[in-house]
Image (cartoon, rainbow, N blue to C red; front, side, top):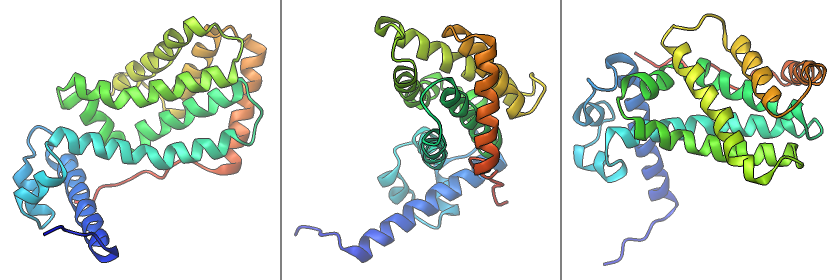
Length: 225
């Protein structure tokens, strides 16, 4: 017998998957990543352990999926924002600002678990790779004269510096808010691409204007207890 999905069964599967992710987010925030078990997540999602494993092979996959789904609205906001300005440094400043706010404000708890608590560097690397790939594309698009051979290094420098600063920030080792961190990283990295200080000032001012017009990229999420 061949199982055929229909509209109703698809809705049921999507709702079940959403409950599992919501339960994982709540329990990760309440108990911590290491202390949370798959059985606890299944119970909180009102499903069986077998059904949970049907959707997600491990806790690590749950956390990775939560991070991936969190960045979708963030990247949609970025695409809208950068479409309002011409290619160049301002676009990269907007990208960096939005990513910093998303990781340090809206999804700070998840970011902390990924970078500081999970003890899974390979998981953090998998989550970081789409950011690297996207930054590489942004640098190529906005600095078309930049040497092709150096694009990988430039993207690694941008994402690596951001990841290190964000990891220290979620641990409480760096003072300041996400806006201050984003501004510092934007200035630092744009200098690395050869942008002059006056042009960086203009880029940051332009990014601030667009951000004020569009509002924050994402709202802070407070997990239900």
